[in-house]
Length: 86
Picture 1 (spheres, rainbow, N blue to C red):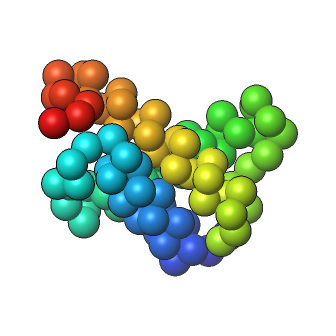
Picture 2 (cartoon, rainbow, N blue to C red):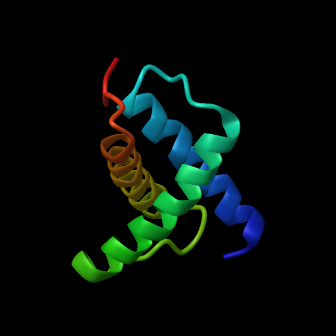
C-alpha cells in the first residue's frame, strides 16, 4: 500500500476513533498520527488474531485500522489520564 493510502486510511481511522472515543475535539494532526499508529496496530493485531491485514483502501482494512486506532486512543488516554468520554 502506498504512503498516501496509509495516510488516508490512517486519517479516516483516527477521525472515526476520535468521534467514537470522545466529543470530537481532536485536531487534524492528532487524528492523523493516532490513526496511522492505529492502522499499524490494527494490522498487527488483525494478522495475529484473525489472519487479516491492512492491505489497502477497503472496508476490512478500514475496520481493522479503526479498531487499532481505538486501542491506541484508549492507551493514550489511560497514560495521560484523560477521560475517555467527556
